[in-house]
Image (cartoon, rainbow over all chains, first blue to last red):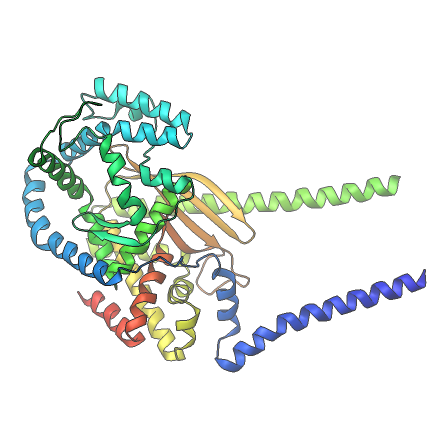
Length: 263
Length: 203
């Protein structure tokens, strides 16, 4: 019996010394190379893993940087002056309604992508929203589905569907005018556009309201211009906090998409 | 048999006790957070204050909630932080704190009757995340998560639980800063970074 105790104690002893020598080693290394206070090294150890910034694939960084500057210049010198005039004569509620009208019309995209991800309850909720907002909500200008019936929006696009099935983001790509994207999301614009009511050619498989390029571009410009007008304060804040605008926007976009896919 | 029963009972009561301690942490922090928000909103809505005075008052209220020094350190990352002298570290922290305050002030300026609702409180050991929805008057909402931790030793002039990161619609501001600082430092020096931060504040 006593033997068992002795073995046990030796075992405990060995395992403890094993532990402490493992712990001690990296610490002495650190202290000898640089002066990092105990508090600092504890804090880095505690948070580093959680705040690990994912490496974003960026082979086109040169082009992306250039395009970010172009977009930012376009925002400053073209969008802003026009927007100031637009905001002066168009009340925020009106702009918000225009945005809701466009958003409502992308119902097929949201419905299909919810189904593709097996989110049937969300697809049903989206259908309810579309029916209510198109009728009672006057062609989608208002959102009684949320305010009166408490039906939540479930925005899903094809990029999120691909992400849901494990397709990685691929290299980051900054698009002219649209801003940050990546290969997966960029390629996903095509299938989403195929089920949109705005098209640049005549279609026979579903309703479309535009048939030519000029019509299509005209409508899309109004849609994006109006949306940006609602979000320009946010962009201004990001610019203010940016030390290096391109990686800042890139990281925010990729973080946001990762969250959207997760949900 | 009785002995075993007693031991199990003690074990259970210890477990329940610690569980209730954890629940209290969450509940206390949530109540504290809501009280703070109410105070901030009261100041924001006080029309008698000038914008500058109002923002200063709010920052006085918020400062004990945030561990700005830790945020500065983490956003720079271990490698870059280690290369700095003590004086440089202090200067960087100072610039970073100023930047955070400016950034908050400009966000307060754009405040328009949004409501804040706490959706969920999640605890993992010494970290608690308070998930909130910011709801605007036209019923649009977005998620903001306040990430707290409890330092082992309480810090001077700070609360027990401190915010070390804020997530807006899934975007961690700390991670975004880390990404931009890292890329900036690949081609430029820490002094350049500090110059840019200082210049931003003058503008």
